[in-house]
Length: 375
Image (cartoon, rainbow, N blue to C red; front, side):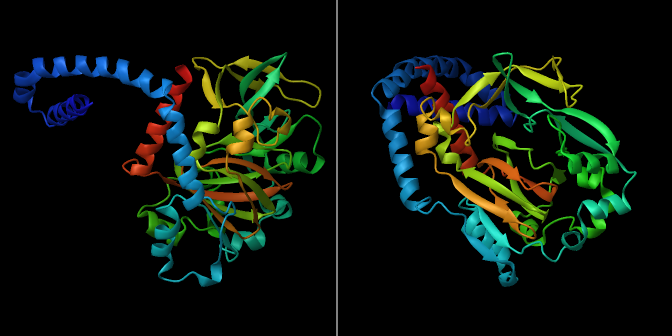
């Protein structure tokens, strides 16, 4: 075991020096390094099966689950903080108590002073932006970017994208036609690129968040849609500041440490096309590989026998984000989202710190889980 550690250490030195361009050192030690790399593979072949066959991995998971349950997730509620208490010290407190611990926070009334909260709704958009062309995603079931069954087989479905005038989108929301669920949900900073005229009513960044993260948002997104639209359980590599402008959003959150109990499957990818109230087509997506996605919806309690660990072991935080509230959704937290009809929201994505040890530990856990499934 000591030799294996030394092998790994020497190999890291090789990489470090190679990156610096020190070719002389690499050439001088190349034969030794090749021998050490060969031994590393031999040790891995010996120790990895030993770890998993002796239940060391499962025992490690029990420790991880128990310690985090006692120290982090003993109270599965999202803490609240009143916006009236935000002061000059808040960015530091926010970072220390929540960002550094990768823990969610609901800031009650955090967005209530945005002009958008006082103005934006269907009537306002119909009056002021009726003829503006908008990109809308359409599905027959409300699940865009999610798993659904078609002719007895499960696929990962992308929504149909179509353009229409804002007033036509609002008409669809008002009428709620069967088998036709519309949602504005482009996640490409669409607020700054496609709805820039709305920026006068909204903050371009959240000052205390930008100060805490020490950066500006990577993207700012505008969301509006049907109450039947559901965001399937997933995670994002972003620190997410989620502001509800009108209506409410219901989140189900699962912490990243519960990854071992969140089942993934590989799915072929299809896209909805020609969606109407009577029918729809599906088509494969060119040059699209299968996608690994979470295999279960937290609302599908009938699947508890098939996925007992997911329903019995994952720690689920449920929180409603109401009009004028802000949710801090930490990076890598799994989340499932429902909403009120005609709900409007804006979220700010701040890029994750990939040099953060938490990200490295998560990647290690992810790799161990994949290896344990194969053994």
